[in-house]
Length: 508
Image (cartoon, rainbow, N blue to C red; front, side, top):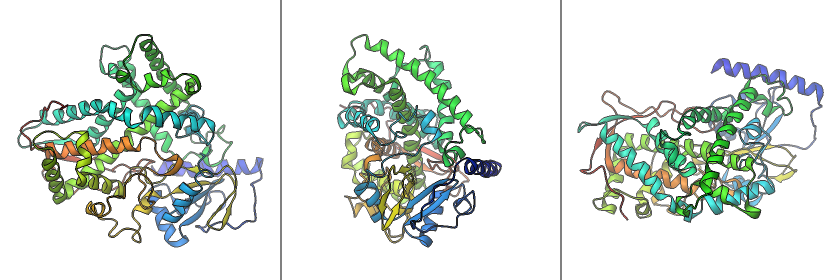
């Protein structure tokens, strides 16, 4: 890691010197928001560092204020750290800040910016957003696929129960959460048939997962060509070559999937049997998508739909395991509601303490601690400053959720705080708490991710008693690194069955 960081610094130094030689840096005499010292070439890199940028930004905001200016290479960065300014950029002026900066990930993994997450503001992005809201993540579609989520959660419970004894079994929660959410997302996207080892696509899907992991690493990497636009041809870190290779492999498998689903649609297909790819291929007229847009949306759902939810479940279970009082209270709340059967999705709205637990886990450990980068195509007024065009802006989700001016004992796991404020939810309307961001670029699948988290946690808590393995005293609550912020050390937990039945049949 340290060697990679040093390589990045040297690559950035060379890139900026070459860029400065060929292109004179834009200058303006307008005052900009305060921020840490900007050194020649590397800018504010020494103040920001490579790890835990959300925590560093929060600490710097205490010194420089809620609107802070930094420079990384040739890129100008703004960091927002107050609810008032977050409301201004994500709600009142969200149109001005709703674009995305150019990036190698957007060009290659986002298929020439045809992904909803990477697309700049414009007709293409609005079209993709409408398709997602109307056809993929509408309440009707989410409800229609509830049985998929139910079946995969029951498989998870059966797997834990089958591998244990009355004394319990040690579960690798990272692997379990990843496997559960991946299984759900794969079935929602591609259907069930690729799980059959006899299917021609089965082996392709196995190797495809390695490509997906590599793509997520590259999306989170600090790439010099992103900070010094126009110098991707130098490829000083080797990332551009890797990202193009990943793009080609993604494209090859996506084309196989699309061709396979087109054959399906030649036959009559019941609406409730359609997966996401069937739905997207069925669109006609003005809604019809290009091949690049189809691949971009598959990338959105597959790459971002797994890690965020799985990470959220693991963090929540870690907090419950080290807070046994809260775990027992949640178990009691579930038992009182479902009355002798395994909890289902339609029960969730009646278990208010479950919602409080999940909300608090997302506040304390937001899986994505900074918003995706926002970008202004034109100059914009912000908090008394005239911000020139082409600035990159982040809202510090983690910083807002841990601000002692906004939260009482912000580093404590206290679900009861949400019982006192039931209207404070994940909708993104209260800027103190925006785990899925807010405004135009808010995650369109936030309701689905939140539902999956609640359902999985409820079933795990109801079916098993959870504790630390023998000899382990504490949970390691250190954070890992990346755009998505996992636990640094995967959580190991001892699961002991607490129900007489663990192979429940779904109720109707």
